[in-house]
Length: 241
Image 1 (cartoon, helix red, strand yellow):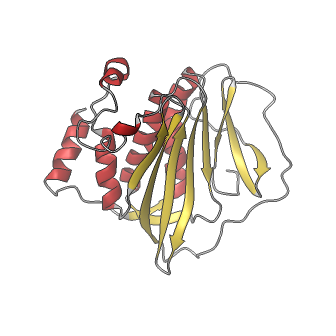
Image 2: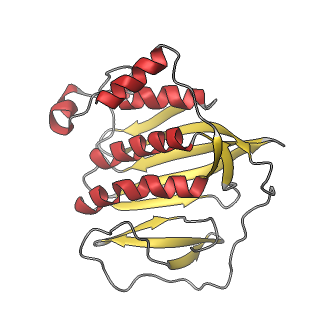
């Protein structure tokens, strides 16, 4: 809570600046999902990551702030979901010679948000419902901070939700391309047959991803099982590490 208040204070004072540097997008996304994997496991939720293979991996931006937004949104999804799945998707929105605009979304099968509250959840100290504060806790600052950070990344944030069925939060963000990295689509391996895990892990994973892969839609994924459900994460958009 203290960190949220400090971040909001910096934003309100115009003193929160991004710190752009080259980073690996897929590492950033996987790190965010790995952080919440144990909580998802404990609730029996499937945790899925899906990054389009045409999204470049090496970008220039503030990886720490991007991870903060992804972690907040995915963490909220886990918090407000009792059964089903959490999905993180990253798509290419548009590209120029020097930059890319990416479309991120987190989708859950949780409690959903009332239609009359959907416009206010990005405001300071806002909660979709006071009853959710009593049950789930929270400061009501996370989504407000996400909105401000996304705006710093030259993007926008919005959501779609249906009460009792789940919520999808979208945001866009713009990143510079790394001039030292060729602008090519990651290679997709085609020599890997469809595969699934035949064994189960009965304890939370210790941050390790199992190198099991399968093809879907012409793309290669790496798969992690956390308990009775599968949790799938893209590692490098076509190559297994």
